[in-house]
Picture 1: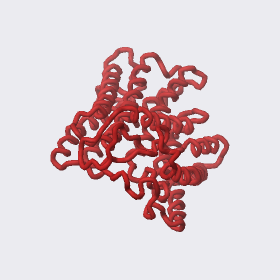
Picture 2: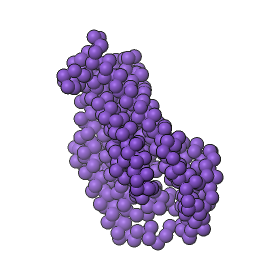
Picture 3: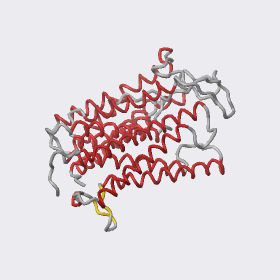
Picture 4: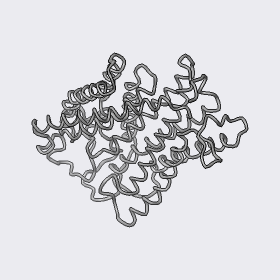
Length: 385
């Protein structure tokens, strides 16, 4: 195993890692914009502006990773023993291979998605076959970027000043990863589901699969909190910026006339449970099983205490119907006078016994994925290639 050495963030690596992070940010911003586009305009053509941003991110990731592989493979100055050998010819960081595959999958999904719409019409669910390929590519790109950055974090001495920029890049990339995972589970991760245990099960599994691993690998005092705050800023900024621009529906039926882009749901307030998990990781000295159990209980119970009452404010309070919270947002194909536009319907509020049982399941599931996440974090600490 190669030993840690500094500095790991040499000048020749900076452009590569910055470009990969920018690619992940473009992809996430484009997907969030595309969802708002569908909610505000509908699907009017193939190459919409958000699609261009998403595929631009894929192209940036592909080119930067491809150039990285070619330079490390054929440059006489490259230290080939610190890279993965592929097909006996090419040398690359482990993460760059994920990025290349992810970019290929994303770019392949573009004509596939256009053909799918022409053949079958509009999607009735988010995970159509072309969207499945797209999200597989996105997650591969984000995973690869995280692995590339972690390699250089591991090779950088703790006192080296170049460690901070690397940690910043990792926080941004991890936040985009978390944002896309929530987007994939949008059927359960939304305001109307916040009084149903399935919301807490979904959010707990997604968050506890990622945050403990990233927090352990990041070597940052408040790593999970930083990632949670960055996720909030990315999601909230998308909402705040998009609603400034005009957009009118073009695909019928149009039941509610809107004039600007509709914001998505207000981001989840996971900063508080993330901060408590950071405190636990610093203070608690138990084994991974006990740590995973405590992480799950802290996250799930804190999330319930925050999101359950906050959902009432977002859905029902006139104080949420402004640019900051976006409580006024409405899909144009729904009638403006829908009886449950500004309140929960009885079917959206789970009975207390069922809700309590569902929360218990969320804690158990969260414990299992936290254990996997902690082991994943340990593995990332060993990455040197």
